[in-house]
Length: 252
Image 1 (cartoon, one colour):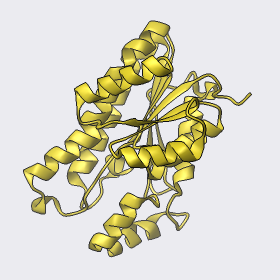
Image 2 (tube, one colour):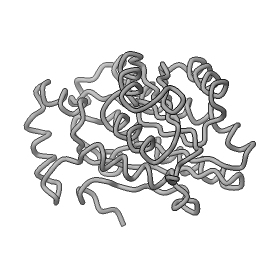
Image 3 (cartoon, one colour):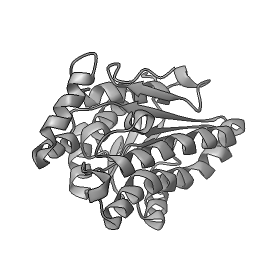
Image 4 (cartoon, helix red, strand yellow):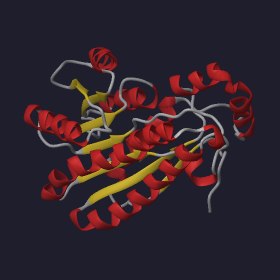
């Protein structure tokens, strides 16, 4: 028996990048995994690669749509039962100076990176508090801790996730629901590669050089931290922020 056997995990952004690696790791550790993504085809592809339908299932979900999130969680509850582990992994960014941003871009960034995780937490927390058990893990960013040129609103959203999670951790502690945050540094994902292709290769190269380990993180390395917070090894850990960044930031 692996350490997450019997648990039901919902991973947003599961169709690629850190989300896909997280789905793979949690499935390996024995959880039944719902691969949630706005790209239903990507979610289905990952789910098909990971296991049988009774252990891994795709779930079409736009985290910016609160009613849609609730409907997707209800669909999962009807099929498998209530969510034990929520991993808020879905995210999006476009790297450009703040003075060049448009209000439309701000809205999209906020909907995906801040409102989305809030929607998902609200959709699962009643089931968790009713059972006095649950794990909520949100992927923020080291940009939230130190800032990042070209990512002003994104950084603000990710900082908001840290504050939100700490408050939620306090509110849910009496129900034995843990709420923790992981802050990746620069990670080799399709999103980052897209930023390079959009003309930000010098900035990304500079970020990579700034990492004491001298390389980007692999998505699997972020997923390993998620698996720790999801496990019973972290039952007495809540309201915490863990950087997985090769030493790029070393908060006291």
